[in-house]
Image (cartoon, rainbow, N blue to C red; front, side, top):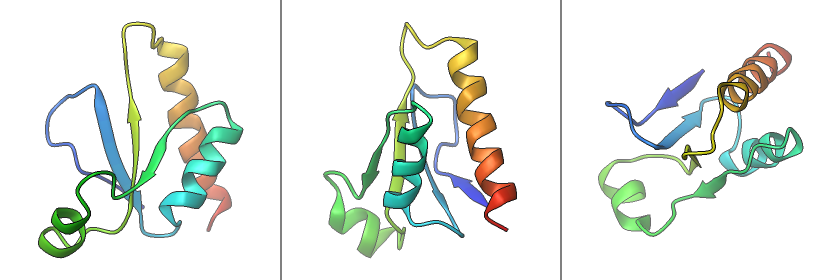
Amino acid sequence: SIHMLNTEARSVISFYSDEHDAHRLAIFLSGAGIMTRSGTFCCHYYLLEKKKSPPLVRLSLGLHTTKKDIDTIVDTLQRLHVKGK
């Protein structure tokens, strides 16, 4: 399953998967044309030691993000979830 760290609507979305390493997940999303970042970013200590969080995947939504872009993200993650079982 995918765990969202966002508790409110934001333009930057951070999440992790129980089944897939964040770096491999980012590569899979990149193959579908979805650009992301993966890892602990600039807050290694906070994420790893304080939050006890695994490495994350992060993506940003902007002014040019379309509904089609969002649908692609959702469809790709659903496809991975079904295929990854």
